[in-house]
Amino acid sequence: MKDLIVAGIISGLTTGIILSVFAWFWQRWVRFTNTEELKVAIVLSSKMQVPEFKFGLLHASNDDGMIINRVYWFRKEGGGKLYTAIRHPRNIGLQYKCFVDHGSLHQSDEVSHLLALEGFKNPSPGGGKPNRVWFILSDKPTAKDAGAHTNNHFYPE
Image (tube, rainbow, N blue to C red; front, side, top):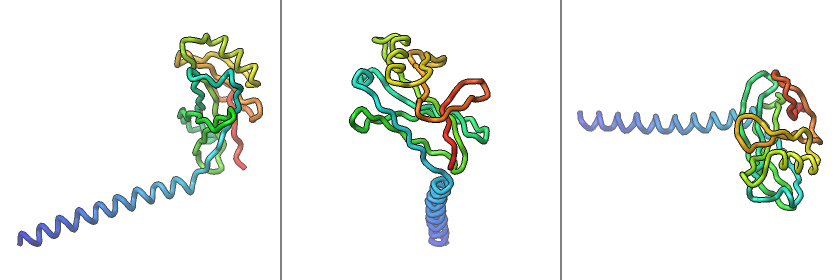
């Protein structure tokens, strides 16, 4: 009788583990097949490639009204180019805005001026986190959100 109980417990645990692993893979597969990746790249001069500048992108919202507010950090690619990628639902547009976090060595107005010289639009110190300056990518489409803030906008194809 003890052997049957032990065998039943082992069988149940094994089945539970296999089903959990299968469910995990299934969720990842469904997420991957129902989403796509938007790659965003920026090119910077040597003035902006200093260690105290950390560039990021805020995925603000999807066009279906879902607010995301997720940060993606840019990574170096070489030649002054930084890139990041946003995974988002397929066939739904999205709004995003870039920013740079700067250390205490620079003032926000100085960083805003440097961003304007680089060709970025509307550099402005933002609320929320101190030492952060927001900017718009000049070569990408824009749209206004519900709060009348201008963001970059990705239109699905």
